Amino acid sequence: MSQKKKNQTGSGQPLKPTTSNISTAVHAQTQAVKTKPEKNNLVFDRDNFKWMFIGMGVMLLGYILMSGGSMPDANTWDPSIIYSFRRITLAPFIILVGIAIEIYAIFYVGKKEA
Image (tube, rainbow, N blue to C red; front, side, top):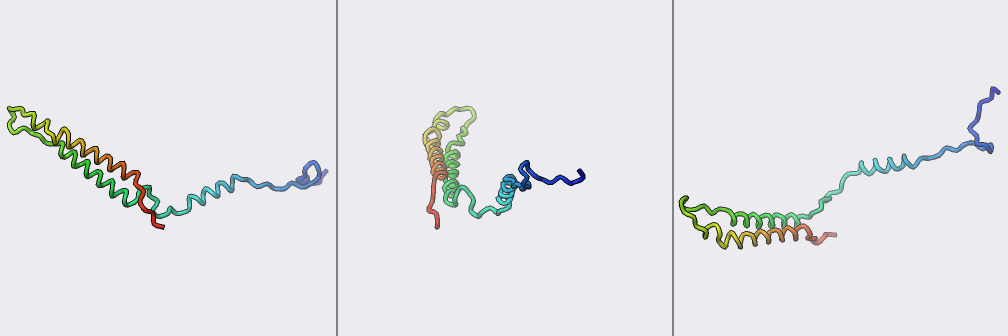
């Protein structure tokens, strides 16, 4: 019984090595990590950013129109300064227009160059 045991199945055939799918999956993941990111991988285009800055400027204008309103005399109260058309109606409308421009900027899809 000093013979060495051979790798054999019960039927007398030698065992064949198996391959693992795990090593190929790990290799594919490492290859995906090693690849360099593409240029222009941004979600928004140059036109989108242009419209976003325009919208922010319009909203900033609305906030500026809404601000201010100090009384000329500290001892008197003048409701026409605080509750003017500019502050109550015009400024909020301009802010809403700025928000609409921002929404347009987010959903805007420009011409894609082929």
